[in-house]
View (cartoon, rainbow over the protein chains, first blue to last red):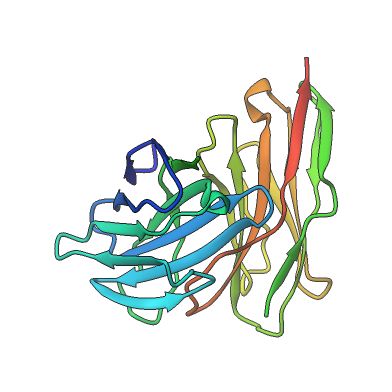
Length: 116
Length: 114
């Protein structure tokens, strides 16, 4: 158990809908990262937050957005869902206490999203 | 941009034997980290081992060790005394110092033969 929690574990929805994925980082971790794992794209970085602020963006679609709350949990919002958005969405967290440092990312169990 | 290449889509090994998974990467940076993550059928991403580029000594974690060749940009994972629980997809990953995103390879599926 990495200490990172994600809810829900599974989500089945229809095209055009909106969903919210939730992540709680390990205790004390300030950074939260979101990754998407799909069959055709592999594992891809979406976005990162550090202590409530957006820190880095990857290949995240405009239909997707995220935020990190004062208690450090994070939510990834996916809207106008398409069939191709079906994937496993991972959240990871790292200690990274110094702003310019880098540390190991520990992954949550993931949320499997199925868009029908 | 950094790239990570895992040229072995699948590997298999007899239980109790040793297997080596290959990974190469491309970067112009000098300060970075390399990781191996394991993804068993449960789909959880589990950290196996980490190597800092500035360290010459190869990292070791119990039965898992790496062969880090910085000049060759190679980072292979050796699993000794393979166990059935080692069966999983293994991903090599790269992280620039000060950067935020992990860049992953395409993975190697490891099968353990009893």
